[in-house]
Length: 369
Image 1 (cartoon, helix red, strand yellow):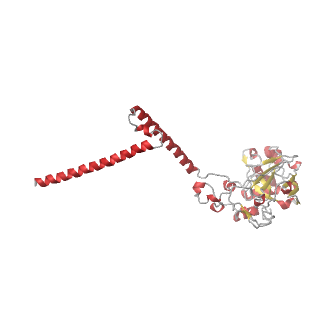
Image 2 (cartoon, one colour):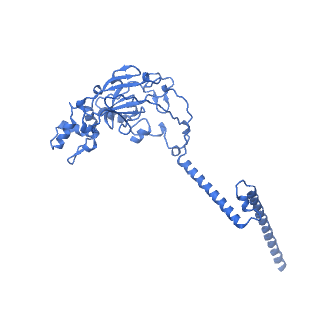
Image 3 (cartoon, one colour):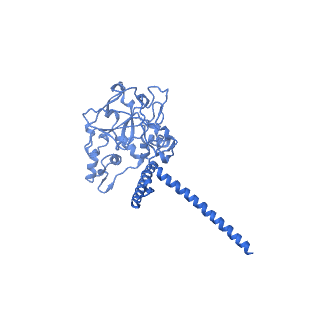
């Protein structure tokens, strides 16, 4: 019985010794691999850590230097990865010449600083009446409620009372007292040809009241329900396009499009391919209390299909002066970004973002909603 036990114990001891020897060989092989890497590596400093006869202090210094260098590299790599995650799109310009006929002439919206016709409603007289605690007539109060929305904010409230119009009457009232196109436009010239101004310009509702717009898509960029509502509110204002639209923001004009398609475009540069307008302003209609003695007109250039937001970005045109605006268009295409997710490219294509009120998706329309 004892011999059997001795044989079993010897077998276990032999197996244990073999395992120790095997592990020793593995460790030795791993150690030799590390030493060889440190000696042959192009990373500066590693070979001095294991160099024979190297003082311990020098090894510690080199070890710290290598650790610090690797740590700095990891930090920089982490910063690059974070930047790549937050801003994955890098814009590189591969410029080429594009014919000006391939892009539409910008929409031009003009808003007169004169907001009322005094023969219908005199804002100054109404303001003085309210200041003197006099009662306004029914028509005066109706127009005051609307016009106050586009005059100086300091005049919104007088004597602690608020004069605000509801949405259904606001546009109707403003359209009745707003200057008409015949009072503000003397001559209109488009592509070296004179036109009847009413043919080129259409009334449009903006944050500055009733304005006049050229080359705007009008009904094409509103949803059907909103367009119907605005058409009723404007009481006969012509918002329909005279011709069919043959352009969209993403793909441009069709290849077989004629030169006279809508929206309008030019075939070249210079005065012969420009829009020239002469303005008029009746002195009797100027209301300093409404617009803080600012006269003239506000002009905004925008992409066809965008709702004009005049108060955000406009050019002030004073009276008795001639102003020339030169447009230098730049086109940026980004079709190669479609395979990126929306979260990574952080922008939308036309068919990827639904707007409640507009058919055409643009950044300006989205921000307005």
